Amino acid sequence: MNKVLLEMEDQKNSYEQKAKESLQKVLEEKMSAEQQLQSTQRSLALAEQKCEEWKSQYEALKEDWRTLGTQHRELESQLHVLQSKLQGADSRDLQMNQALRLLENERQELQTKTERLQRDRDLCSSDTQHLQDQLKRSEEEKLALVTKVQQLQSLLQNQSLQLQEQEKLLTKKGQQIYFHKF
Image 1 (tube, rainbow, N blue to C red):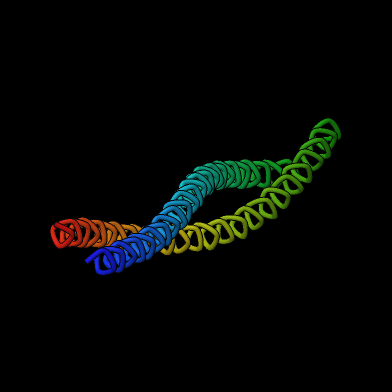
Image 2: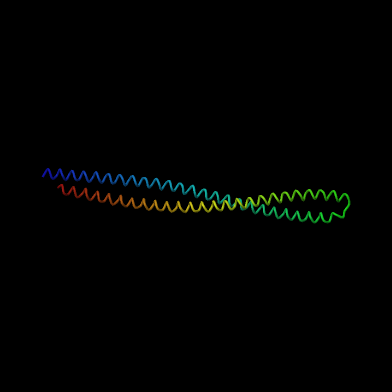
């Protein structure tokens, strides 16, 4: 009888050791999954922050582009006004010719400004396209990270359920061995 009890005690100890090892492994996997989840959530938060920064920069560039467009139209309008003045000034005397030269200089400055604004506008247009592409990539990264977070949460939930099932099995086996002992 003692021999049977010793064998049962050995079996109980063996089951308990295996259960503890399994439980330890599941706990380690759970901790690893939680760490991955936290890391992914941090990455997602950073990606969302970056996305918002790109959106803000994109909106600022869009506003600058609109302002440059308005300035360009105003300068073109001023240029047309100056050109009209120049056409009427051809018939005037020397004093008017001096004024004409001044207006011509002003027109050239405006033309230079117009060209510079056109280059700036083209550059802003290129920057805007670049920002739109980066914004799209950021949105795609954000979507991928959200999907990964959901997968990790699902994995974590499944591991928690497995852990609960193993704890129940361990409790049942412990009770069975206890009742068989007596």
